[in-house]
Amino acid sequence: MDGNGRWAAERGLPRREGHRAGAESVRACVEACQELGVKWLTLYAFSSENWKRPATEVEALMLLLDKFLKDKTPELEERGVRLKAIGRLDMLPKRTRRHLEKTIERTADAKGMTLVLALSYGGREEIVDACKRIASQAKSGELEPEEIDNELFSENLYGPDIPDPDLLIRTSGEMRLSNFLLWQVSYSELVIVPKFWPDFDKTDLHDAVAEFTRRHRRFGKV
Ligand code: FPP
Image (cartoon, rainbow, N blue to C red; front, side):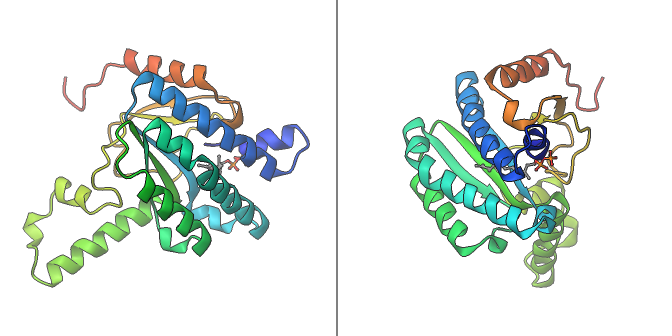
């Protein structure tokens, strides 16, 4: 969800206003996914690297997340949206973790779609954490190193039940992955949208999905 800061700067507003506007786009995006029948949506809301931003911006983002979880939980329940989170969640403020756990619990049985928030998330960190888990299973004798394959590795990621994304959308025209789902995006189709995230609307999501349907996916075969 890139470009909140630049969206705010263009308007002479503080960066937190860009994030506030960005939180509004989240709602439109979830609605558009439901219209299209998309079952899984993962949003990169806060990266491992984002902890290095000024403390005031980190605080503003955490407060925004608290507010989103507090205000939107009834709407998520009504719409049948199940919430999940991936990342080093133990690094989040206690208050945010509590809100998160509550919403996850309240929406656990929802059948519509799953919204995954990547929080305090880094793709390399996820791979390192999976390695640690696998190594300790090997050390304790639960696992032989020869048993390690792609499937077993995926099972040790933060969200073993979350399918690899078919489509990765990046806003604000940036053409890089920025440590997002590095293992999982091996065969994802990439769509780069020039708009800043707060300006990304339902039509943009529909357009990105339409572009995806025109791609010919070969998965390395001919
Ligand atoms: C990247 O834009 C965006 C973020 C680091 C935060 C994304 C968070 C939200 C949209 C709001 C909270 C989330 C939810 C799920 C309610 P940037 O700040 O790097 O923008 P820039 O590249 O223009 O500086």
